[in-house]
Image (cartoon, rainbow, N blue to C red; front, side, top):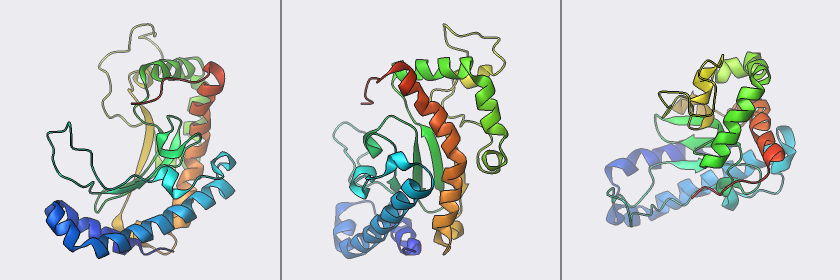
Length: 231
């Protein structure tokens, strides 16, 4: 198991020293933490393809891991570095994919696993709402599974609309599902959990719980075809 504590130790210092001078002076510490994260990502991808979703076979860390450097050209926030490490395995391109994936986020005090589709483009979001409205009983069945209830419960509620969008039934039995602007589901992870020797097994169990809903959402691509890439 990679040394996750080494990753968190580095990331715990970065918010207080998010500048190029400190980063350059601690470049060796960053490189050591990054190497551990790439090691974790390699093992995670291999286990996902073997035990959860064979369609992920062939993905490499470079396909799924973000660089630490922030693009600050058009941002009021000029901090040069991301203060987290994240790996996003998903069908059709890893981090560039708009399909449902199996995201793991390392950030001291804010580690998490997130499944599903984040920030879908407008045409995909409309199609997802239509699939959920038409096949809500299948969604109910997925959410009734003990593994799902153990880790997720429901779709995340970030940035929900106040009303059901036009074109959908405001009296739909699960109207709140149609108000989602993204279809993700998350479970928080403590720093102790991600540093535990069995963390890889644990996160694979979480990914298995997310897999049926990921498959349901990804079926939208089979039903409607491709969609506008996310900017």
